[in-house]
Image (cartoon, rainbow, N blue to C red):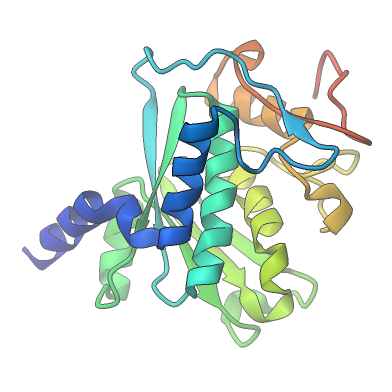
Length: 226
């Protein structure tokens, strides 16, 4: 019963608990008709939405230990992926209740929930000193471990953009941008076509109906991707 109440709380409170800044950014999008993260030399394509399609929803549960500023950065990453996925798949962020136990987390994973957990360099999964995050799981759910003491808050959106790509089925691409195996802030502006193509293949989505980022150095002109 306790676990049922926790899951009910997660589903009921959802985005409202993710911090006012995230909610306000979504409201700004609705008011302007354009993504608020569409800035500088980089922008996203804006194909007609697939809202009429009964898309799949993936719940993303955010660790209560993240600060409000960090939650905002996480929310911006999820917002960009939702724009890219264009209604075929929807990432729904919720805030994990602080009383959730390890057993509860295991049940969430089995229910298809992806958990974004905040850890530090002392965590057992942080043995690779070059790793900024570790994603463990499969299409049925899992955990993204953010090793938060290895980078600044300003980089959190880019790091999570990359890790969400993994949760959606994208692998590393040594010749890619966002999904390159080594983090480079210059490649973390937004979700490039190569990353979207890998996710489209893994999720069996129509690539030509999804969105992606275009701008200097990105591969928007490619017609295929391995």
